Length: 264
Image (cartoon, rainbow, N blue to C red):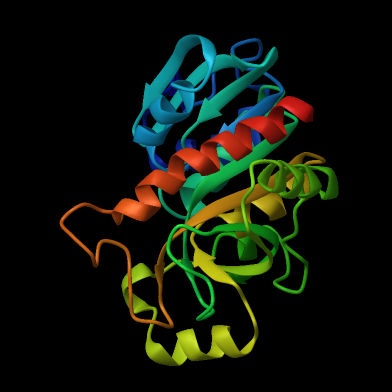
């Protein structure tokens, strides 16, 4: 089985990840235990964004780092919080939610990037999700695809209020979470656009669904880094992953997220 986070075989790893992690002293992927983190966590996908969020906080303390997961504790305007990266996609995001819940986290806020699916949404705009279509496989192992992937109302409202207080024009509505970044064909894009889904990303469906099942509160705000309808995708404007306007807006999305967290 597993001793001190060491994996001896696939069967042992599967058992712990699905059934045993709540009872473990230390979580096998995040490498944390009860008392290590705070009840509210901000969860970017990119481990590098953990430092960018921490730069706007005080009393920053390193907690753990393993694979795509990096965790620090901090305070913002007196609010204690944890910042934890989830990596790319619903599978790794689900592991983060499972293990954060196991050690007592009650609220999670995704702060990320997204690709717009409507022509009037520009690179650098903000999107607050009211729900996420499940174009992914992870949540299907937990529940029927018929069950909604939706955020907590208070977290959703807090993000919208914080965005407006920061003077942002924020788009509020449903998005889609997809597994296959390089298989988002024109046919898919046209279908999502026709459904009036605002944007596409890769984690929110799992974050919302698992949080609901576990009695946690969750929300998500993402800044737009490309527009699939207009043919501008992530990195299309240069060698860097994000266009310059979106890079600036990441900092603004972080500020909005922290402002909302301080009020929750």
